[in-house]
Image 1 (tube, rainbow, N blue to C red):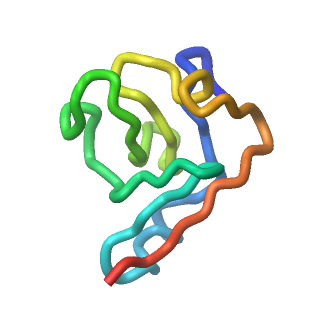
Image 2 (cartoon, one colour):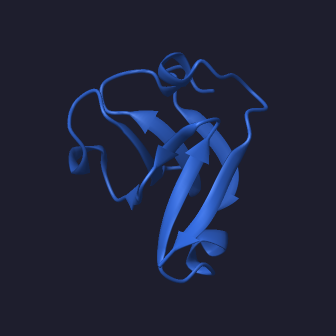
Length: 84
């Protein structure tokens, strides 16, 4: 979890590129339906998944804290799924 409350994963862009189709992300019971390019792709306060400056997948809230919104901390399980 970074200082903004973003959840930093160990999933890199090469792993994401190896998944064909649309990728959905699940953290706990929360489903994130797609990986976006920028925070501007979602509404303020909305949960999203995107590749950050570390070249790794991050779970974030536009203008907020994903850690607080999801009530999770370091070690939370993040699942990727390919949707049709």
